[in-house]
Image (cartoon, rainbow, N blue to C red):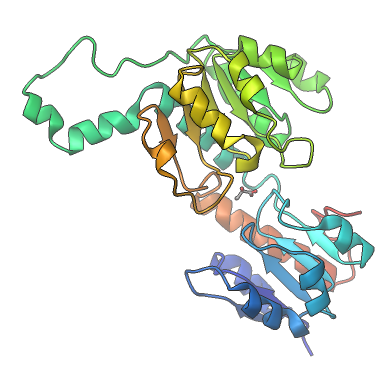
Length: 323
Ligand code: DGY
């Protein structure tokens, strides 16, 4: 008899197909997230679970899933999982690093440039007919933004994604500052990146990009005091996790002009719907789509399947989080 896996969302078919050969597969195929009480029932007799970042995978879920041996998170971040508790119970946890690095780094740059060059404002100006209504073909002072080329970028969190953002910054002739738990001498050499204490990085950067995992230490890392350190011409980009930024402080910073703008893909609460951020023209808001390319999402589905198949074959899953 094949072991059972429950997948909490319709991930790309390539991964599901791979899994069908080895597992009895059930997929939650509704667009909406699986209600918690349904999830707790679904996991009752499963050996493996494929979870999304929107599901809390914790002691309560493990209690409801006595046969569960492995949780494969369909994300590189795994702050939705109580890894310590999983480890204590001998349950493997895996994630999906590498395959989404370039897509996410590209998206950080998409947000950075869209915010710096006021792309969304300009798009609605064009699309709404406002441009036509004005009847002016070109104006030397319209939609002035900020230069990226040759400026200073500060990357907070210098793992795979942070480094990939830095590689792109090199092409933009930028001075690259970074802050992370450990220094990366090889990347410093390769890209000329400079390690900086966080406060210095914030003071010196024209663009601050957040690429840190959410942990107890990074919760509200960017708070009122730190936002006040940034240049009034600087732009903050967050492609990490919403809780890395204190939203209330960010709103204050934008209102009072401590910074020039923000490009956000992640929020303290998702889905995000708070008028306060919507009221700023200098903020670009995306609905957590950093890794949303066909290639990355298919890569993630394949890696999830490879992890589960390795586990089923008695091997160590390739991207195990809890060793
Ligand atoms: C991740 O992988 O952690 C992203 O936030 C979703 O793809």
